[in-house]
Picture 1 (cartoon, rainbow, N blue to C red):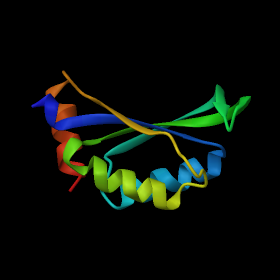
Picture 2: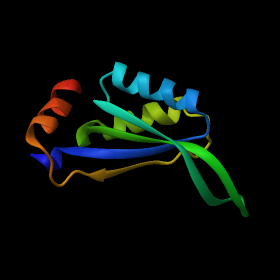
Picture 3: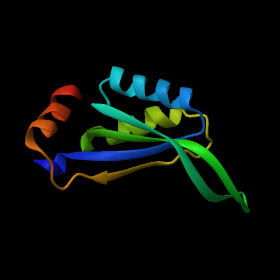
Picture 4: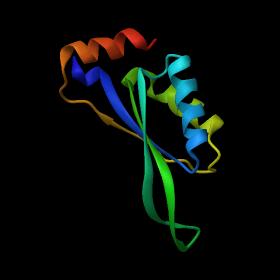
Length: 106
């Protein structure tokens, strides 16, 4: 059932912080896998100003039922006061891979 899974996106300012977050999430079985993509060029408005910077994008595969617990853990550890933590449902996928996500998360 693909609908029981989601992909979450989190941006992080420093690559070592992203790696620590990824290791924590996978280590605590809140995520099956975290891909770290860098550098990502981000352009955004913050506190009324146009900003531009390099970030690391985390692509996180997990169960939808774990998203809230994972979100809280990321918010607790993230250095940003308002981190990007969003999720999109997985609507279809390779069954053995989805089984693997299920097996690697609790």
